[in-house]
Length: 165
Image 1: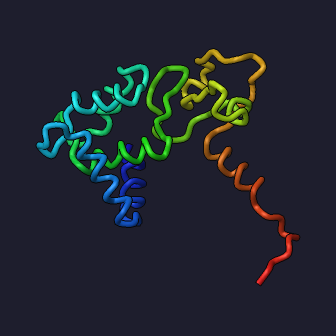
Image 2: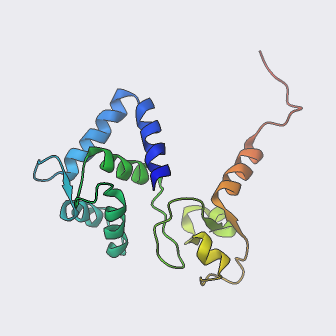
């Protein structure tokens, strides 16, 4: 989770003031009693409001976000939540149900089908150990980093393209 924390710090440092203000508003919207910290109850209220399923997954995320292990989230810890939510990084393993913090495998056919597909995302352990059930006709999985590079290569202009000055 430390790598995600470092990513969040780097993004936040470069945000324009308007987006920093949005992050502050997000924190304040969670802090129902105005005490400057977010309890698990306040966090779970937000989770329910957003309609997320599998509430126990989010209780475990709260514990992951709580770097100081004091049972509450301060502003910096909520920044991680803000980043995970806004960036779409709330990814859970469809094999074991764990929150995926780093590289993971995703079903290529589901990914290419877009939001209409159910999708299948797997942690490295579940993918490598074949600990999942997914459609038999969807047998190609690719890790998230390789997928990103593949998309980049598809969208990269060819070297023979004319350069306009």
